[in-house]
Structure formats: C-alpha cells, structure tokens
Image 1: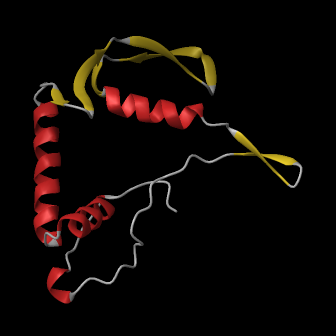
Image 2 (image 1 turned 120 degrees about the vertical axis):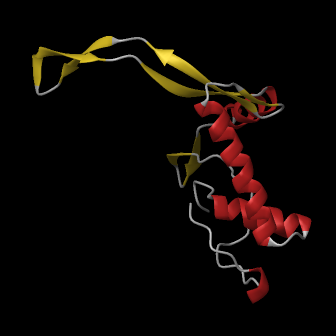
Length: 137
C-alpha cells in the first residue's frame, strides 16, 4: 500500500465511486486545485468546511547560520508562506490514528506499528480505452 496518494489516484477513485468519466473528474479536480492556488497566491484565505483552511502568513526577517562556517551570519529576508490548518474532522481522524499503540509485538520482538490507510484501487486497474486520460502529477 503506497504511503501517498497522487492526483491520478484521486481521479480513479472518484471515477469508480461516482461512475463519471475519468476525464470529467480530472477536469473538476484540476479546476478546484487551480482556484485554490490562484486564491492563495492573491493572499486570500481559502476555507473548506470539514477539511481545513489555507492561508498566507508572513515570516519575519531573521538571521541564520551557515553550518559550514558558524561564525558567519546569513540574513534571511521576510517572505510569505502558505499554511494549512486542518478542520475539526481531519484533526479528530488524525488523533484516532495517534491513539492506537505505536508498537506491536511480533515473535517476542517489539516493532513500530504503521497507521492503517484506507484501501485504494490498485494502480494497474484496467480502464476502457474511451476513459483513459493522461494525468501528470
């Protein structure tokens, strides 16, 4: 099971669950991402209820250190960064994952436990030729 989900994974999963053609799903997903990016680039806050909030924060100017020559100060200018604050439902879902034991015992040895990830359709799902699309992630 992969540890990340790509745009293609989302498109295939939504298409399978809704019966929509993958190209239509891709168009909607891409437009959504484009509008979010465009709004955040303008400095607007994007709030998606039950998901989270994207906002631009300004980092102050500061002085850094060069690890190769610690005696040299490196000025770091102020800059804008995008912050994401998860919504209540996402925070609670993550807390449930954290509440599970972090280790398990196998053959008398303790091993780190991986969080359970919901099942996704395999990447090699056969798609009819009329529904095939090119997705670059």
